[in-house]
Image (cartoon, rainbow, N blue to C red; front, side, top):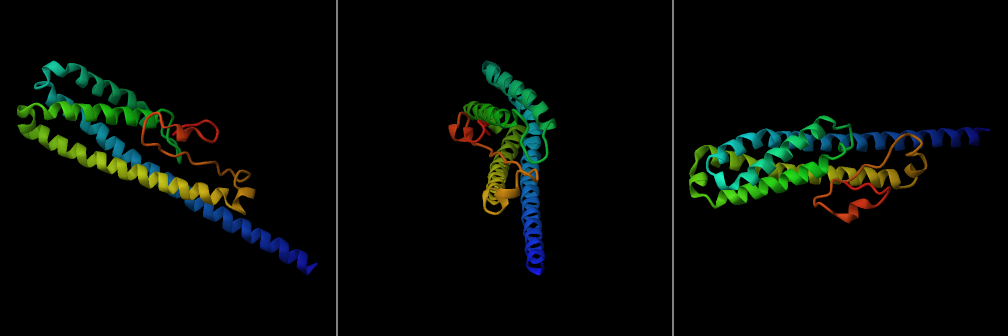
Length: 190
């Protein structure tokens, strides 16, 4: 009888340790995702000023400006639908599309000396470059946290309890559109 009680107690302690570790790691994933959200909102707030400053100079490049404005508007609802611990549907694709469009705008702006010399545009470009770097670092931190969490939940003994306790897989934030590696496990690409 004492041996059985000791085994039950040991199993209970092991389950509590596994559960607490998974909770900590899941919360780190959520925090890392929140940091991406902060940086995406910063970029989102910079884009209108950038487009407006460039509009007077880029009369012949209207399609680039329109694309950036359209993608910014399309990305806004995804930022608001963000859930705890998992990127909202469409957020990754919207983020990557907006990043590409802003990159094209920057490339076009570089070919206009008057635009490069404009103080407001120069400040906005510098701010945008800084935010883009922060977005990249935040994506990497999120993926690192998601990988640590996924490894912990897929390791023994956690794999025995993780699903039963409600610990689902953290989806990764893929850096390139069309990245097929993200389509593993359940066909979900992130």
